[in-house]
Image: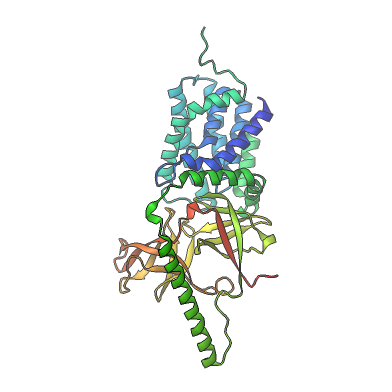
Length: 165
Length: 250
C-alpha cells in the first residue's frame, strides 16, 4: 500500500463527500452515494487483509467526522470491511456486477449497524433512516464500480480488467 | 490483533461524550474550511435555477420597500406616543441585540457547522437567522466554529406562537416541522405565520420561523391538530447565517 497516496485519497474523498456530493443528490430524501463505503469495498477487494482492515477503520473514522455521531461508522465500516477482506481472500470479486452487489450489501449492513449504534449512543436519527440507507446503498452500488478505475489508477494498482492472457 | 485494537478505538469513540468527540468534527471543518466552502458554493450554484415566478418587478419591489418604511415609521410614532403616555422609557425590541454574520462550512440533515465560535461571542442556545427568519439554535460551540441545530431536525423543540396561541414546534427530519399540541378548538389557517417566542436573554421579540402549510386532525388524538410548518426560507440553500447575540460585549 502506498500510504501517502492513501492519506491524500481519503482526505479528498471525505471533503468531496461532505461538500460536493450534494450536486449529485437525488429525490426529496437527498440521497447521495457513500463514497467512503465505495473506498472500503475497493480496499477490501484489492489489498491484503491488514491493509484492508486499516483502510476500513480509517474510512469509518472519516465518515464519523463528517457525520452526526462519532464511533458509529468506525465500528460498522471496520467490522464489515474486515469481514469483506477475509471473504475476498476466498472468493474473487472482479466482475463489475459482483462488485456492485457487494457494495449494495455492505451499504445495507453498515448502514443498519451504524443506525443501531447511533440509537444506542442516544443521538438523533432520521425518521426515514431505513429508506435513506436502502437508496444510498443502491446509488453507491450503481456508481461504485465505475469509481474503482480512477481509484486503482491513483493507488497505482493493476486491476487486470483489460489485459489479454 | 490489529482488528481488536482498532475496534477498541472505535468503541472508545462511541462511548466518549459527544462534546469531546465533536472536537474532531470541528477540527476537520476548520482545517478543510476552504475546500468545503468552495464545494458548497459550487453545489448551491449548480442547484440554482432561474425561477421567473420568484421575480418581482422593480416597481413592485419599490412599493413593498415603501410599505415597509411606512410601517416602520408608524411603529416608531406609536412607540413614542406610548412612551409619552406611560411616562416610562422603553427600548425597542432587539435594540440591544447584535448580529454575528457567519458562513456555513458544512450543511447536512444533522445541521450546519458555521465559521464562528466562542471567540466571536457565540454560546449554546443562541438563535440563528437565515434570510431574516429563525432557522435554528446553536447546539455546540468550539473556539472558532459552532454547530447549528436546525428547526427541521427531529431533536429540535422550539417555543412558537401562531397568532395568540403559544405552542411547541418540533422538527420532522424532512425539511419541515410539526406542531402537535394544539387543540382543534383553535382556528388554524394555511398560510398563518409561525413566530419563535420571546426568550429572556436570547430573543427580545418574536421573529418569523415559518408558515402553516398543512393541517389535519391528528391520527393518534383527533382532538388535536397535526400542523405542518414550512420554514420561512430554504434552509439547505443558505450560504450565510446570522447569530443573534443579546447585549454583545463591545
